[in-house]
Image (cartoon, one colour):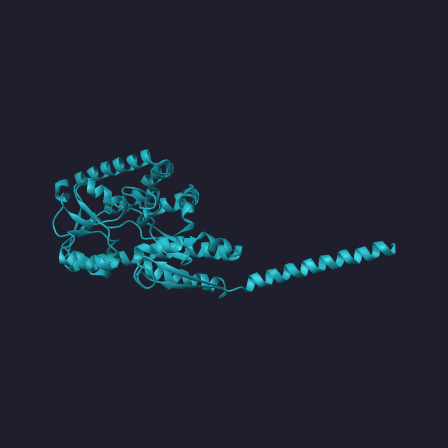
Length: 361
């Protein structure tokens, strides 16, 4: 080998070694970097199910990252009010938020399809649409203009229809009714002659007890018992036509998300999926126990008349079709949602529903 080639070879080797060393150093730096984030929620601190679920999410992220990523949890009102979560994360005031997408229908009517719509999909169908039917991709498209990256993070399962201090025997009984009910369900109630009111959790019990509202829906027996709603209303109606499969969300400021290395992104994503399993499992177990306590308290648990549900469903599709006609984005989301629901429903009828019907044999 000529001397010139030998020296060039040494130079190349040294350069390669230097690059390798720098790459290793960068990799080491990335793997030891500490990330400290804050998450604000729409739930009161440590609220059973949703609030405690966020605490668990933060713990999962910390443990799976071996302490490289820590999340400080702030309940509603501790750092910002419940309904300012979306804006706080969008603007980058905090890195993460947790809530339900229908709270943000004022930003885009399309958001509510990613939480729950009346007479829509249940928890199994929602999860399937999100992960295998293009739902998550559409959701991220809807949130992108707001500088947000959403991830499904929980589902409370089908809800109850709500608490009332009078019986609902016909659609006429909804006329003039002032009821706490968010999202599209609120608009359906308005068209049925009622007055929807959107209240944060902290104000629901007092409003119902004092008569500021005539009725309220919240979630189901587990959460409703924790709020003491059974002491403020006599009648408890089912099914929860307004929210058959309410998905919860973890929203992340997009700049904060993009700053994470790939392994921490994976840890956050998987932790959200784990939280989803935790939340629905807890609600399934706790709702059964809480319903027994509510019945024992003397509450009159009743089913909505079929005629009332039929008319509410008709009004729901009236609302959706108007929204879709006015907004191409809503139309795209609704088309995806509707087509997946109709496709999945055929299987549900001969699987989940069919096996439940065997209980009456």
